[in-house]
Length: 450
Ligand SMILES: [Zn+2]
Image (tube, rainbow, N blue to C red; front, side, top):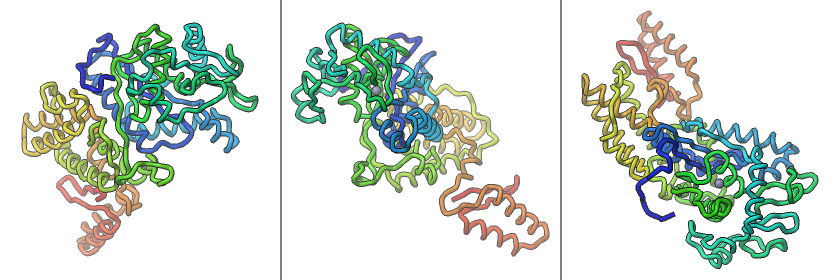
């Protein structure tokens, strides 16, 4: 809101509250939708390292005109469609190593809370009923537009505001709209209908987190109109109390230097990317940029992120037997960077420093370096896999399964035992051609894709 960095002061240091706008579930999500989930999951991990109770809510919008349209095309009930894509979203988010939020409220499970909030807004004369709709009267709020810094005139000139007969003023937005008989709807004081999108978040924040929360997050594209309208609804329903003390917005993701758009057809869906890259590579790429900056996303970045993770997992693999020491990371540069408006690029470069230190150390210093590396990486949801497991991830080009690789390694061991060295080399070459590299050591033969 202030467009500046401020020291974070929670309303209640025993219970920190954060709300992030979640997806509208009618299709798979693209990498741009994954960015806020990864950024605010990292913030959630960081806040959890500082405060005893962090309540993080991320909603599911399961009633929306896009959901209704897609469900009608498929001849499905909206709940069948939205449940399928909500589950798919959870799968994608888990693959990116996002923790489940503390609260996942669904819009359709909060209709009474929404109609209740609308009634209060109508009673306070911030909203009015017209032709079965209920609209928020933006001119009833003196400082409407303060988050995006726009005046009403700017908004009307620049935005896609719909002019409609039921609106008293073109900038007014819908809180409730009527549903036709064949459309999903709920009974309300204004007839059978459904809520407007902006209203959902205000009602769910009030119900689960309270009238004022500590942090509200989301993508930069939500500042106007969505967050502006959340502020209007909540603030006017609560006699001027702010809905959130801190607003944080992540920047856009571009694909190979271009904006993601329907016309360019360059959306990168998370589930498609996961067929080529481990989720941790996507997460590493997202966190390698500062959350407020615009981020360019592309093959080179993904490949280089994969090599960077290989390098650190490679160090960890050689130190598998070393128990990581429990260390205090409070005085590290990496932790300070994360506390400074979530400076993940600096924290990631520190991870590489810790890994090099670990590689050069031995004894207690080695255990401590490993402890520091894993503790800081854990705050970003990185490097928590078994290093052996990491190197078995398919790298494209090779479809051979782990079981088939083990069978071939056994065959090679047998050939070596039979002193058939040409046969043993043959197996090694065969695997190499399929992108699998063998490494012999005293403990036996290890393999990795690469
Ligand atoms: Zn929202």
